[in-house]
Image (cartoon, rainbow, N blue to C red; front, side):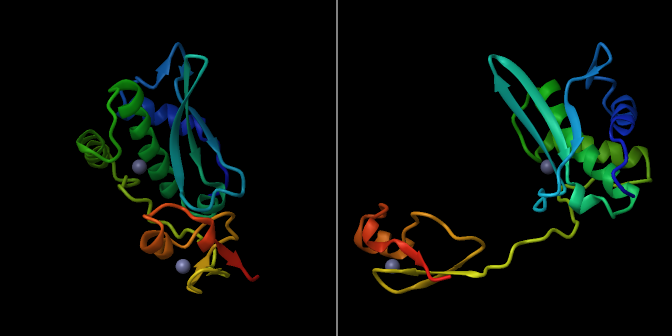
Length: 176
Ligand SMILES: [Zn+2]
Ligand SMILES: [Zn+2]
């Protein structure tokens, strides 16, 4: 479908499913944008942050995951994240996919049938390969990682010999 403008969709959903609550004085209370090319682990997310006592929140949709998928996948992901924004900012309830989320999701799914909101975003996501091999210099166990890690210690050695506390003696060293 490509990187279509998200704001018109946001306004349409806000009106149809959220009783206009996500817009105050014509301003969306949550920013909506496409990610850059790096967001490859999730189709979208909602995030709230607080700086200088001022709350701001945003919805980010993954460009690399959604850009070649049909419109209904973009709609369903945006709507999913809008439910998070609504429970957080309007209901002011701290839940992820709890009862309020599920009720709203079901309500939206009964009201229309051009897309379906789901709890999980079931789109193919790219996971990096486990291609880095680390070795515990204490017990010689090997572990595979998606990237080279700094200052991590062997969990089994820490548990067995160091009361579960990080110890330099069992640092994981990378050979590649
Ligand atoms: Zn969610
Ligand atoms: Zn070890």
